[in-house]
View 1 (tube, rainbow, N blue to C red):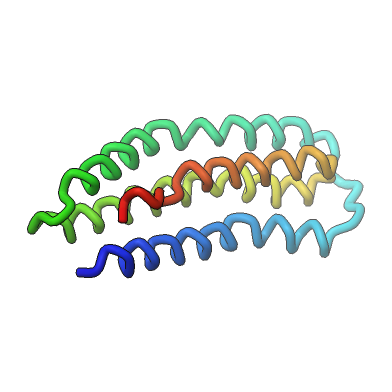
View 2 (cartoon, helix red, strand yellow):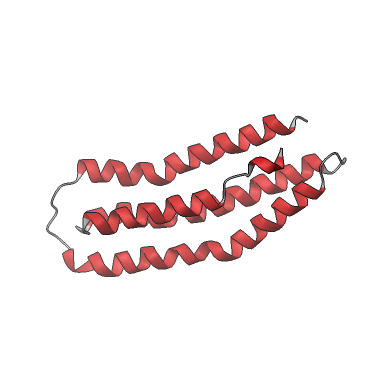
Length: 138
């Protein structure tokens, strides 16, 4: 097993999940202009989007523990299993971290203000940054 190749594969997955998280938001922002219906749902949808950020907190603890375990398992027979555990923890966290951007994409349909939609996208981007594999792990 090559550490650099495994880290590269996890980083590629990170970029693909980032595209999956922010892609619908950007597509709907470009495609939808003015809907006019259900505008009263804009604020509750924004609040739900912000609250969804906190769903990653329990998952981040598991990711952090998997990161520490992978660091400790370097040059050990258990290293491949540690990398797999780290990848699974990262994917779970990234999928849940996509929720603010996905809710922001749905919020475009209820005519949420562009700044609020941008904030939801940035919230997902910050969560994704927290789940990035550090360079020190190689």
